[in-house]
Image (tube, rainbow over all chains, first blue to last red; front, top):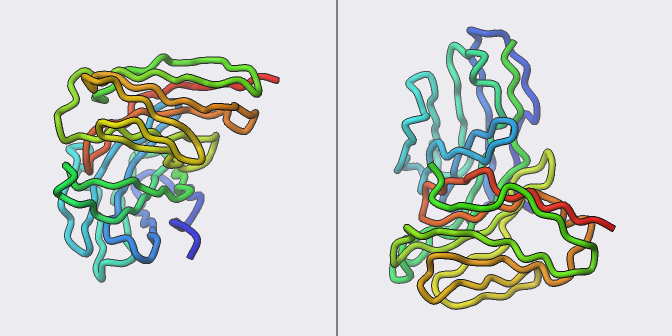
Length: 120
Length: 107
């Protein structure tokens, strides 16, 4: 296991269709994050899991978006009834959880190559 | 919104040090400063992080001011492969990336 992997790398879909992306984190990492990135912008945080628990969701994560991490390993991000505005790169990252003694408990995140979604 | 401010672009000559500044005046006492970079069409790559003390690793050095309101990422001998967008981020689990600094290393 050399890093975070994402599948598919590219997805073209028609407006109104549902799509699902998969992320496989680094095997010993218990935290998994999803981000969205549009052209010319930095990644925008969507949500993160610690093990199988979804601990935080951004207001960007509308009710058409759902993420799961059923066994605390891989995760899926589903977008229902896609819209053209959903076209973006969807990035996954993983990390270990940090020590609360050190502060926020966050640790460095390792990103996958992303899934580029195009909604036509 | 991102909690950091970075210049939109910088140039650096190959072999010279690249010094990338970041302002994070609203950082709280227990928030780390993280630096990532993103080469075109790839996911962001972790570079370095720090809390109060200066840090150095095989990729870069991080200098954090005593008041922690700003920091500088130093690439000691920039190469053409260091051309990328560099992001400075503070905080915890919900990292908020800004637009970053586009560093261009020129021969």
